[in-house]
Image 1 (cartoon, helix red, strand yellow):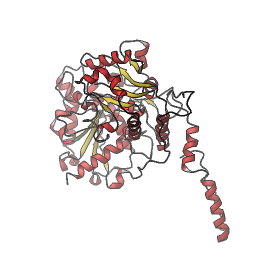
Image 2: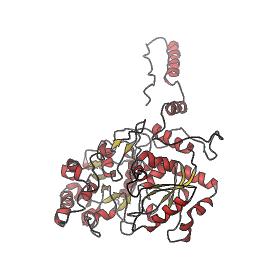
Image 3: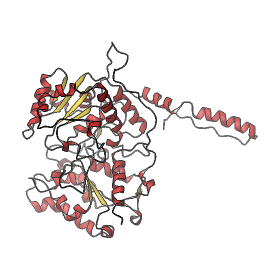
Image 4: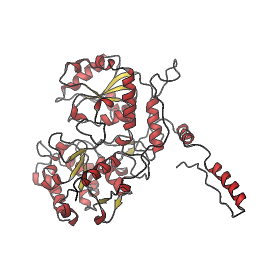
Length: 466
């Protein structure tokens, strides 16, 4: 709601004719503008964020490829809980979630996680942003954001007998990252085993053997299977296999109970107006670069080295090389720099790195940049709840084993401009459902990543016919 909204004055009980007159006058004062005009006022007072270059070509009044924008409210008006879905949130002992934050300095051997676990996992507000909703969010923070949202969710029930879904708020990803260098396997797996023992003792678990339970994990699947050095075995435990596991990267071959959820990006709006304003901004942004690549070389992903070479040699590509300790590499840690590159590009290359998936995929969608995939497991087999079944609607696929990967610029230039516009409009339409709304928001008015997951889980549980 806009802070400048005028409230209706109190009406005295006068004659019926005078009452009708004053009522009409009151309505005129209360609704001084149409919804479309209100959004336009909001846009006028909402400066660009965060630091996205929108310089217009002096020879053009509008971009050639700008589509008609919409400022109408989204169609999402019915909360999931109105469809007889209610979620019970376990009050786990603190050792399984918030207690881990007491040692936030030791949650990762690579970085100090204390700034990143602030604000319910959103991290620190972006200092370069002049508007609310923008945070330096860590890519592994989904489990915290999910927890914070469900604690305040209108579909939450405190009565387990009325629940259709049971949420287990275990910060398994934060725990796993703190144990990567733990050589004592018993100590490494102690908390995971303790969680399973706790759940199996609960009557709510025993009723359906955990099949109506779910948990959210903010790291990739290999961090929870003991098939590689340093990983725990949470997802190998039989009880964990009974639950639905929402995870930022699933096992495409064995994870039947695993469901891919988006990596958190930097935008966490509180209202649909903020979301609509950003979407329109991405529709209107000028994109002078055909394609871009943001990333560093990887020993096990030679295709990245090839992309860096191709992009560096092309006048149509914008490269942000994240390798080493140069000023350019440091820009990769700045959300405003990342979004600037992507928002000025028509296509964003999404090459596999340490694993199949990339947080960069969701950054590119947020920036209205069409993702170019080279493995089906970067998105197509991962996020089926969130993305259209037909990948060509919103992305480009170039098989990493094909010769086409050696001539990326040539392949992208073949795509008709009409199709480019359609794909861009599609990914901009996808932004809300791939975004995590601010956990402190209520009635934000669009279907975000959490709402998509709850609706999908509800359908899944109903098929079990308990």
